[in-house]
Image 1 (cartoon, rainbow, N blue to C red):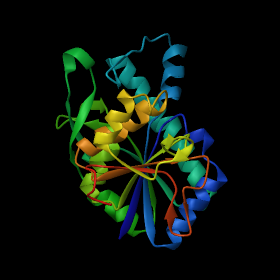
Image 2: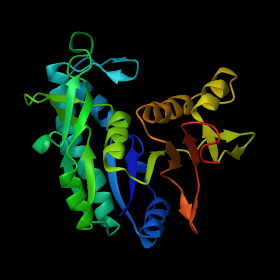
Image 3: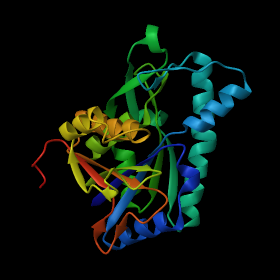
Image 4: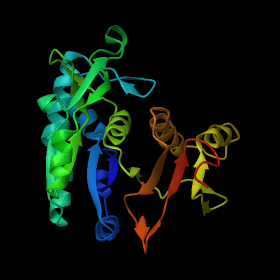
Length: 257
């Protein structure tokens, strides 16, 4: 089975365009099955502000108290997941929402409970349920929430969750859906770049601004074990006539060229 895992940041879900879904349909014609992992940062921040709960980050990870964790799960499972699943359903895909902590699907350990609170790193992915859904032509839509062996729920960085699930399922392509097509140099889209080149281009100000966290998230996923990650736009066509449109970040220069 050919599979594509798409990670959608919370900020791009509302901006997914008909062109994006047309690309999914093109991939579907070529025999691909899909699963989604999503974030929900803007919705979570809005809800935390509503309840006047402080929120802060450390190295890109949301510090998660018990109260923050309660709101994270409420938003991810109750709103963001439903929004993305509904968008997919409206385009004819059989979306099936999956809370990562249900049934031990995503098992995690605390990263540093004293410093970060209820934030985890995935140590095991129970693939049977997702494989079954894919076989039945459902499109799993997965919240990045996991549980410890003792059932304590943990907040997982969506990029890390996507990488762990992609590795466990041996997907053919792992895609980070953003609000831009990929990395541009001199106004031209870069089709492929290595993770070593990424850091060089950041240091020399070729990659700047909002692209920096995007590419570093992709590099983090590669460092978890993936061979490559594609950055594509959720606003435009990203696959057409059997060709990908975006930037593929690879583990090591030359391995895929």
